[in-house]
Image 1 (cartoon, one colour):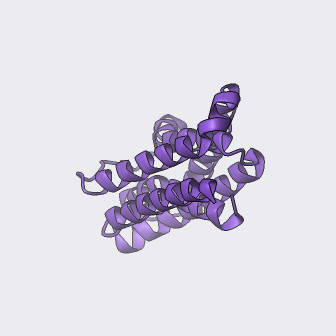
Image 2 (image 1 turned 90 degrees about the vertical axis):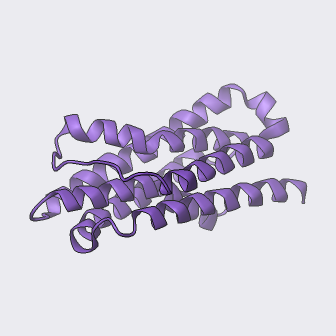
Length: 183
């Protein structure tokens, strides 16, 4: 998988965290750097951790995955992408102005579940997991921190569009992975 593919996966996976960060930015009266850093660290750390966990889960079944890896990667990425697109048409999520660990932990876990499945697909196509996880974590950190500020400036207007675009990119990368396995 190319660096560009990994960056696109990182951006796509971070769309949920970006959307929640926008909502967090909306929820505070005055956004400070600390708000952006808290969101960036929580979401970036979990988006980086989950693919590693998924990769090791997938590596356990490496023999089976080596035969059907491209199909597994395609199916997981397409499913995650389609789910993101579907969710983008749903109702808006409620987020409050609490930035404590008690509030951020469930949000970080919820927004990174997709990354666990992507980690399994990485094992299937034998991606080097540590660089990939670092790219995903850094991308999510940056976009989440920016999302807090965007939320304060623009509101919730673009959440659905960002989530929809992220889902479409994941589907396209899944298709590319499948097609390149035949070439």
